Length: 535
Image (cartoon, rainbow, N blue to C red):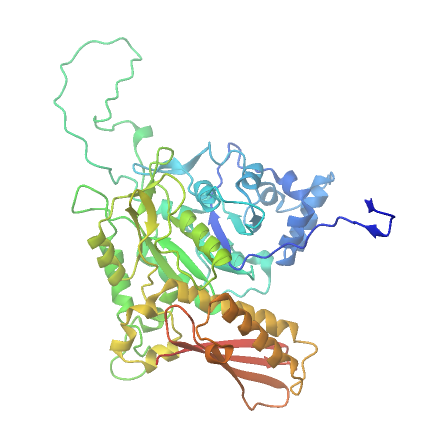
């Protein structure tokens, strides 16, 4: 387009893609009649394929494109690609998810329970993640989907012990989720579905008197929803082989070792034998988590009194427990992780990663099930530390973002007294999210300096000051001036290493954080250490 006398020319170009401050990963089931997916739709989306290849799946991307172009020679693994199993796929709208998995909402899964039915929970979680009427061009939320086969059961969602991330093609779904650099939240909706006891009833039905026997024509279906189930196709089958208390240790250990900046959302499993008529959280699971969290700060080895779960207690900060489940006209039971993760991503984008989602109305018409009173929410928040969803003034919202363990590194926990560790502000999920985001931001900054940093070069310190000045301007740090919000001091170190000690004063809700930024140009390694300073 030319304007005036052709001295001004407008050349339209696509704007660079804005990155979401916190990306979310979900692992789950996408049922279909024949187990397939619309892989051709993905094979022709070059932008999405480039993001997948950047994670280390170049061979899978090239094979998808070759299959789309008519490659005739079959290769091992083609069936997995046709179904898009274990392939991290970035999703930025519900419509794109439906284009890749068009049958996911209408096809029953293999696992069936009396409470949740047979529908997979991942499609509903994706829908909840993108729910809301205010989506527009400014919404940059990114959701990564990893589909796993239902035949693998619970094991498909759990990490393998002592796994490294060197060879992406050999990793399981959980480890592949950890390859996404900007991811800060992980959700496993269908793992929660598999943990719902098969035969756990809803509100008990009223017992009816036996009807008078009458003769009816052959083939007449009689089902008043109260009769005893006798036929084989009506039986619900056996429970999952893995107990809920066996799920937490591998998850938190893998996150602490491979991605200490990430959190995992997990809804409390249901009690198989509730004391009341309504379903309730598993007492065994709550006692197990409380027992582990009670050993935070204890020594894991050596000495006379050795805490058996001390090593695990220090890693519980990577787990954010949720309660209760959701119920709507479309879903008899569903996971709340989609709504919670979607609101966490939205608040991080609009107000900052350091802000909590507590008290903000959640979109949708779903209601918490079973209903929770304020007294029950307070009890769960205090012990063991659960993020509870409540209905207030007809709106679904989070009561408080609580963690079951302090969001501090192990060294800080051992240095603090039991009274200090028990302070409620240490168990804030938004602080853990902020610390993870800081770690990712400083890691990215250090990687930019790998090849051109000199210990005498002032640019690293200038880049750090600019980074924290932007945080102060955005309201993440308190203080009238930047000098009151953060302090940066260079640490004497070997010739090839750059080290800075950084103290910041977050606006919410703890006093100060001390960060140590280390960069070694000889071995091309960047490391960030975070510790808390109280007072």
